[in-house]
Image (cartoon, rainbow, N blue to C red; front, side, top):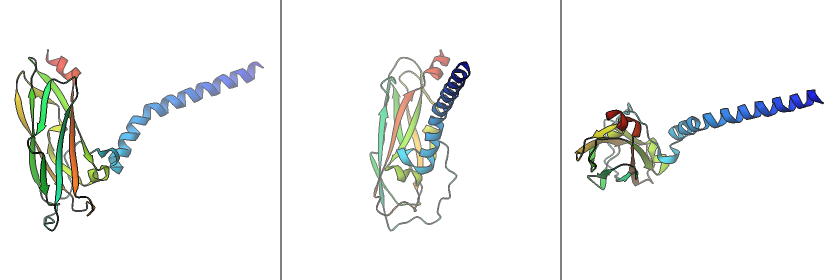
Length: 179
């Protein structure tokens, strides 16, 4: 009787450890899955070393819509300078977002990009982006933040609209280190 209870408790303990391990690994696995498949519109968070074709595809245009969102904990105004841009796949483009810290203290923030439709994220390549690093704005400071990108010519011909969206979050730990 005692031996069967020990086996039962051991199995339950192993099951609990396995479930904890699965839960711990779920977020990194999901992030990797989204990065590989483009699901969820996630883009690379590092500068693209992708091949930029020498000849852009001038036979087609893709409209890129720029979107900006600010987390409610961040006292910033944030918007794209251009709402849309017509681009030729394979050609490098540059635009910018403008951010203003309307608080009376310095604030550090981090932008998280996404691309829609999700599979288009595999073909949307940023070579320079403010989202690669944290951004510090002093009290009342405004700054233009550039984005350099190209759309890979491999993007499906049926995809004529791509949305580049950012949500900007306050980095509380980094902001507190300033004080």
